[in-house]
Length: 178
Image (cartoon, rainbow, N blue to C red; front, side):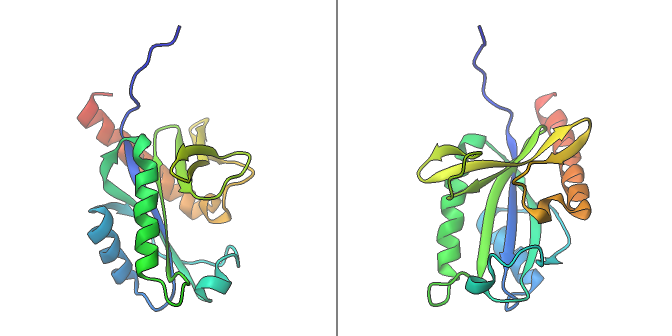
């Protein structure tokens, strides 16, 4: 029989897609103000992996990944997504988003995103929010799933996630004796 135990705290992760009217520095400041201090961030990059957001947000979008300086209970992921949805609405123009916040969490075995869209591979968490495992660890490397977004499996971004995981592991060892 298995024994119940709480999960290790996870690193809060945030992917931010934004219209060109925002500078990279404005996005960093916005994330810090609303989600906490930034522990690690990727280089901002041109989001040319998909046209999915083009009609709503326009062309020349940029994106950046953040790991925030807070460890969270993974069960709170829906709350982080609901907060991000409210923030997106605050920055919308004529009902169209100018910023898209995608919160998630990083654990040693995986990177999980929160989403409002249900698909066969997503697990319902409550309050209209689903969990989506984008990357998982196998043989010492992050692996993608058939549904993993193209920007998450780009080699430069995979290297960022590996670095974030290593930093997270060191932090867990220091604070939780792992």
